[in-house]
Length: 209
Image 1: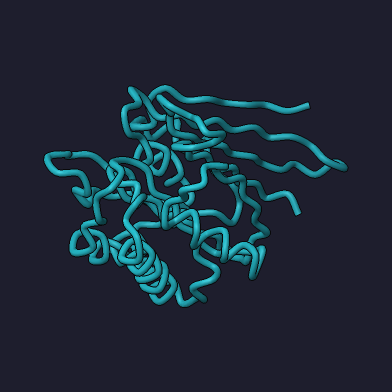
Image 2 (image 1 turned 90 degrees about the vertical axis):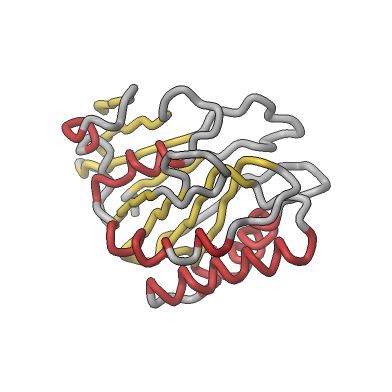
């Protein structure tokens, strides 16, 4: 048996407490990644312990830089400490510079969190074919680190939105062998999801061990 909760407006602090998973923290900020936008668009999910991780990725032959980097990191470690996510720019079809920028973001995130680059996963969504505004992203990583909090996952759900009209996040508590565990899932809407899983971001966190 389990109890669940979904959300329509994560701006209500009283509801953010429903989306807490033991050992996980979230934070989001405005980096103004997309010109003219005034919304949360950069987010960080952090696990206080190395968390087992797995991913499902687009089947498209052309993969964005963060997809390439994250797949490589998961092949190497299969565990992670953090996920750095941005909306407004997909860092897709950006060639060698896109890969270089993604690696630098992972490097700087790992440095701030005192972990290895291979333990940092990346995800980006938004405009295709434009380089990331590194000068606006990198200075915000420290702010994200300092803003991490257990109830911050609702802010992450808000930051990964693109054309969505509301955040999409849900939680459930279930009992396994008389032990209560929590699961939180969040996703961004996708106007086009082909080829399979393209443009979709979805994150599922749990304290099941």
